[in-house]
Image 1 (cartoon, rainbow, N blue to C red):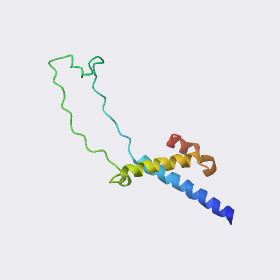
Image 2: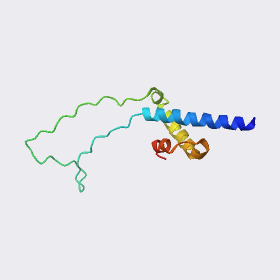
Image 3: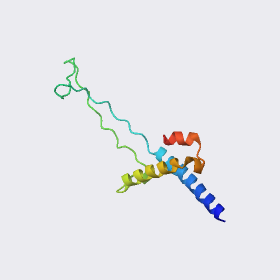
Image 4: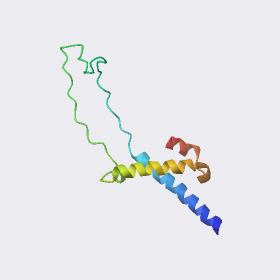
Length: 108
């Protein structure tokens, strides 16, 4: 009976690891724009070399889409909690019998 209970806990942790991983993969990776070149001496932005060219106006980008579980007042704490949980589960990979391909997704 005790062995069945421990196997049940291992299976639940394995399932939870896969669930958390799928939720984290749902969280899109942000793409940041290239920073404008800066003069290393003054720290000010460099001027364009061609004075006839007008700088392009930047379009407003839409807000970064967040999954439901990552938005709201507790969104950041939810993300941090899930990352910590998947890290703890990945450390127990042998015990939980997690595949190498899964661990590569976790980047552990």
